[in-house]
Image 1 (tube, rainbow over the protein chains, first blue to last red):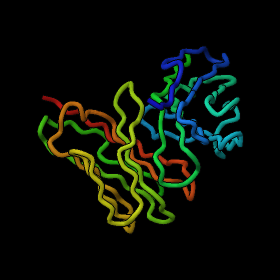
Image 2: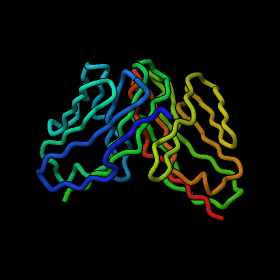
Image 3: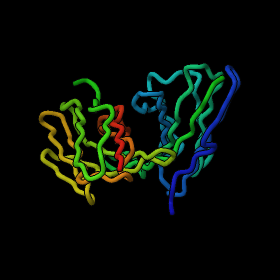
Length: 114
Length: 112
């Protein structure tokens, strides 16, 4: 089945130690997104790629970066994680940027910062 | 309404009960409303995408309605089953793009 895969499902990192979360897709979708969901809050978009074109949300901290080396893979890099970055990170894809299409999600990576 | 809001925050029903939740959103610049079901340890699953005022969609025992003029959508579950236990998220499209603005979700627990 075509899907969105996230690895690892659980990640523990130390305060200030860089960490990378991975996402891959077999849907051949043009757009990939990263959402952050903190406890009891709504998932919030961090950024998205349309093909190789990177789009940052205005309020995404500089501590967060992303790479998309090819259509299938997208990485979320947190340069110096703080305690406030502990959250569920959801990767998602869509065929293009047209409104009202279903967006496919991965199962998420839960990040703990100690 | 400035943000996407969902109520109640959580709900506990017994098997066989019917239930419903509400999603409220800004009615200006509305493009589409999405409902997702998110079971623990799984991916959020798309249930419905609705765009037109008065839209009604149905998938098995689950249905949804949309009122774009007043800015709300209802999700109904008829005859709840334990496998319906999940968090139900609604989201709107942010402008004319596929980016989603989510509510905080309604956590449903169905017990025997």
